[in-house]
Length: 127
Image (cartoon, rainbow, N blue to C red; front, side, top):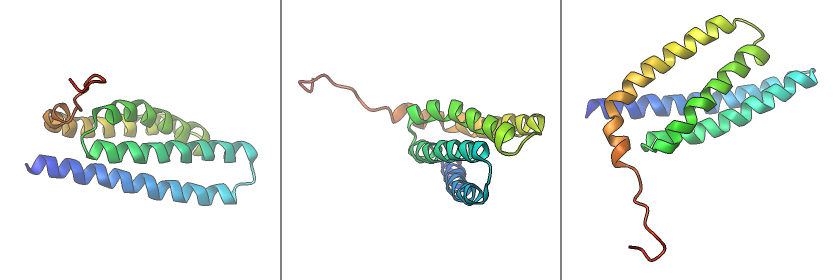
């Protein structure tokens, strides 16, 4: 049971980090004088907003949110490394892989909860 609590705490911590980071990126957006940089920051803020929603759904064991969050996090990490922070793509890649390995191990331990949470799909008549 402690693993489930740890999973929820870590996921909600990631969620709050995404929200705070989105706010801080909006400050960067206001300070930017480059149109191209500002465009990438807006895209990144949009991805963070969607990511925050997906993390909230993941904390409630939504499998579809988990499947959507993986690719979205890759896109976010790439934009952050390539266009917003300009460089150190190798370091960002290592941190990204390490983070997903750690979170993946945590996900593996709570995976049965994801399988139980799938909604039952019925036809129009309710049968």
